[in-house]
Image (tube, rainbow, N blue to C red; front, side, top):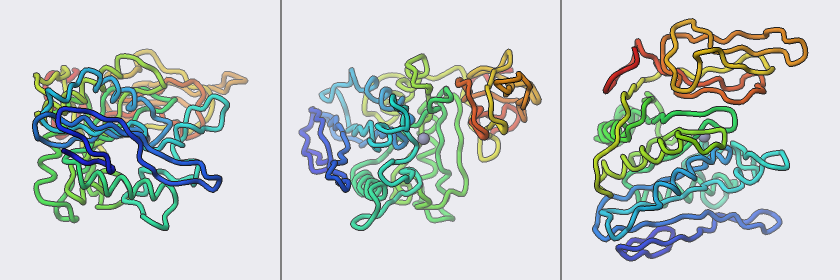
Length: 349
Ligand SMILES: [Zn+2]
């Protein structure tokens, strides 16, 4: 028997339930849905959590698809799913047909900046963070936290993980275990973050400080079901296979390119206007240093306000799909092909 959020689950079965997370002033209840797939045989506990940012709903769908054909009777270990961790942020977004928000509209806080949260007297978002920190650190060995390119960008799989250095207070052995699993996920691009201190606000630093391997998988976007959703499912299954929860050979991509710190760069537009991609610049493309990635045009006069170029030779692991860009809009992510710390397979020439 395993107990998650006060729900007891027998071996070889699955349950779906909701956990109470608080009431708003008008008595609207905030509750968070979850599922527990408890294997017939004892083994590691993996938690799949998504939509900490409600404007990134693709992980929710990836989790649903990944778990469709998983039978607890055949499993060794347990998978806990929390597909919509921050429900109000998916519900509200400022337009009639909402595309969601990064923050929780109940208190305007970013859930992935307030971990480990505050119990009792905290804002709703801090209370959610506290609830998740306490329960996930109690039950989980490994946590995978999904993000996506929002309604502006699309992504091939990117795994981001803290280096979990013991010198800044993380448990011994956590770093090596995280590194091993971050590679086994089979993301095409990886980013290791050095120097992220324990409890600095993200779920990975809070749970890492409590000994739980925690990684972020960013994949898909634009609210679109396409091959990148399948890629997210592939990575999810790879992690379950690596932990021995389900059987089967991992499915790896042609290459993996893992960067550290500034080897991986997030690119933004400076000008506002209409964005149009240049020829040869698309999601997953290899681009040369100084290659044109696109332009931002004045929507009235057609004047070119900005020409965007690649700062180095790399792979576009994230790329903009939305035409309207505000100043500081996200153009994409670039992983450096001349300067990286680990690779596997046939890197693009
Ligand atoms: Zn996010």
